[in-house]
Length: 322
Image 1 (cartoon, one colour):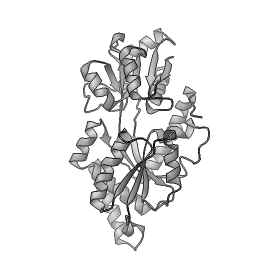
Image 2 (cartoon, rainbow, N blue to C red; image 1 turned 45 degrees about the horizontal axis):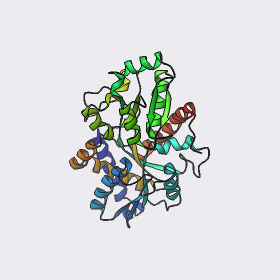
Image 3 (cartoon, rainbow, N blue to C red; image 1 turned 60 degrees about the vertical axis):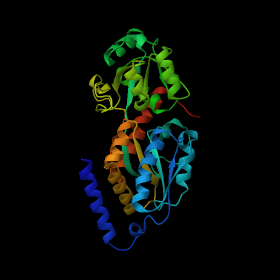
Image 4 (cartoon, rainbow, N blue to C red; image 1 turned 30 degrees about the vertical axis):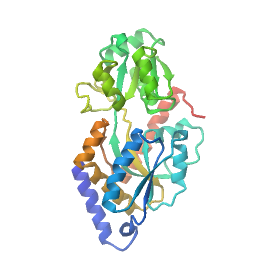
């Protein structure tokens, strides 16, 4: 499926290049700045560097990863908004980009109108983990326990508005349970408190969860995405119990709204080519990520749908960032 998509994108890129002289032939003609709204070492930063390295090697232009970890991505988004829309400034975003649209009462930009989707890059699941002391072995058992002890079960998150928080709230809504959200400073703190039993469960980013599940320090119940993870193949999906459940900590590439379509197409084709490389696929696998690309128009529609979907989750949670 990925190979077919790459073929279509490359064919489109060749057709544009064969046409009149324009932005496609000239791009890229200088270094590319790839904004990352999180710190170096984060999952989003990992994807930016994995893609950026191969992009630079193929295009002969430096790709500078610019980490701007502030205000949940708002600062980085403002920088992207103010950049020249020629494709030389991009941003690697995650699900938080869509969450911010409703988490903040007022943003200095419109999440849908002011940015252009280039391509989705990867799907990344969370892992529903519980404290071993709970003795729970399945999603159904956890839901039954939460219903029998309404308001007495706690779940942790890596902070208000984080992907782990939204995952927890969406699970709460889908399961019809009354549980208490306990936000922590980050994933390490949330996992420590899950291990210790201060909170009963946590939707942990898969890379952080894998060693703890394998060592037995936490009990892995299921992955949050609609398909199983190749690095935890024995774990079912939450959707196996709650039909249709699918929470994906996706990562993707966006640019300013007025980027030329031919430039978007060329970047999307290049990302698809990169994600099909064996060494890149192996690197993504170590992060529990599955390569997943989209055409620019498809990614625009995807982001719009995520903004609307997550607005309902944010509203139900009562979460605010300001």
